[in-house]
Figure 1 (cartoon, rainbow, N blue to C red):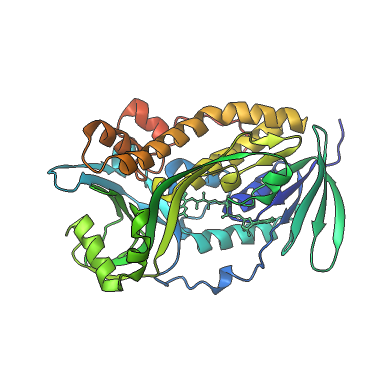
Figure 2: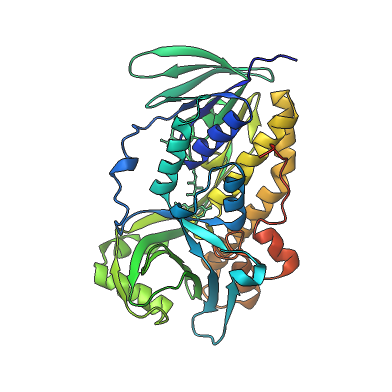
Length: 402
Ligand SMILES: Cc1cc2nc3c(=O)[nH]c(=O)nc-3n(C[C@H](O)[C@H](O)[C@H](O)COP(=O)(O)OP(=O)(O)OC[C@H]3O[C@@H](n4cnc5c(N)ncnc54)[C@H](O)[C@@H]3O)c2cc1C
């Protein structure tokens, strides 16, 4: 057997590309990690800013990262309970971490802290070379190798790699260069994303409230700080942009109610179109898509990173067992299909139910509830059979020996 390490180029050093590079290096690959952006952005984010962006990681994601030595409890805010209810109806459903004998149902992580944490790990890993800013141009990809050029401001270098991982985000140029097509669905909705300060302590609870125009989720982020996401019809874009902070707080209060007291402050808001982008094939030759380049889910579902992490671990698990990269990619795609399709179907249902039907349609609501950001994968299950899968607990991944 050839003892020289297999080589991989990972294009895109977002969260997914960083994790993928670290996992490949751990599995014995020599990795070149290339990102188009300048590397200075992360350190400029202030940790207490009310405008930081965050993601909710599921219990399973946290466990996976932990198994690879990539998790640190200090970077996440634990979610110890989840409360789901409906506006205008009595009653709610609560899930407690203790019910599932886990310390937390999930963690809310500030993106810049996770990115910095992974960056430190990368710089401590001698098998990873970082090229940033740089770009990758694919010359040829077949079932044996990929030939490519890595361009920086100073030079262009030719590379032959066993594997190319395109983790270059939703508008992936690598995907195009690999000749992989995507399907895009526009839901005519916008996600309104912002952090808020609440009057009452959230007690590490996450909340999801179903309202006439869509779900509103609040995730614990800091002491009285919560990350909020809700949907509005795309036709309201200019109106919501023009709202004063107080008007936005009033809108959130109206949707959420008084359980957390008054909402007192809101950070910079982002309005993101709800689209679903999914690739037709996930690999071509020795090139594979991972993360947002493979599928971009709408943020209200909160599933993109969790699914991508399972893919990243699944890919490395398959590569660890199968020396032939093209065979490993084919095996990876088959092994991951069912989980990917399940998540796609659920998040698609969540978006469609609020696009077509104002409120309330009980059958559709059932779908929406099952698809909710807080219950699908991020948080532990509603029902044992359905739920263990939703918490990401019941999905087997090929082991990479972590
Ligand atoms: C508001 C919001 C909330 C979300 N909440 C959650 C959540 O709670 N839970 C969850 O699981 N998911 C969530 N997601 C989804 C999650 O954020 C994404 O799935 C995840 O960040 C995708 O990461 P990525 O690394 O694939 O892509 P990106 O973060 O887009 O990174 C792509 C990287 O590629 C680089 N790049 C681009 N082009 C090139 C090129 N040509 N060559 C080299 N590099 C290139 C970019 O500079 C960037 O660094 C949310 C998304 C949004 C928008």
